[in-house]
Length: 162
Image (cartoon, rainbow, N blue to C red; front, side):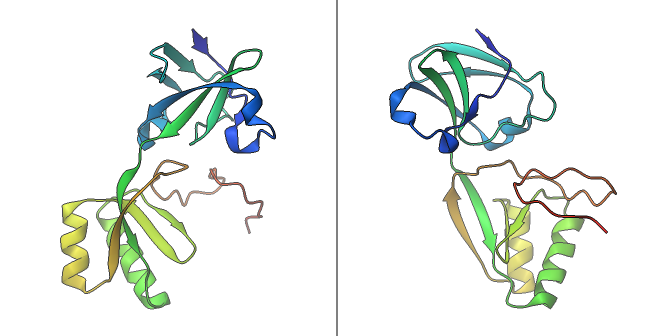
């Protein structure tokens, strides 16, 4: 079966217990794909081919298989580095360093999160930047910073560009 449209995110469905749910485990970078093959916890294979370019896969994306039946994507937890800079100067230096290393990141809540990488760990240690390593389930894939005008966001906040 080929699934072409995201029904909802499971977190946004008011009565998920009323559905029969199959779950497919995916890697966080699979969320960047518009064509994907998955196998559910029921052993069934599904193809995903998103036809609407505005739709993006995320942790919890649910596809309607039949009335009352859903396939839900669940992201396999990733080993990540979480950096909590102590001030704006350290944030700037760290962001610049990570940009030079060409690493995709997530930034929010005063923290920089990126996939574990030995070169990054060595560089952070050398620069004296404190960090933790954690295993977390990403809701969205890591992305490279896009500073071009008219860039697209994959978060749910509304804001204006100057």
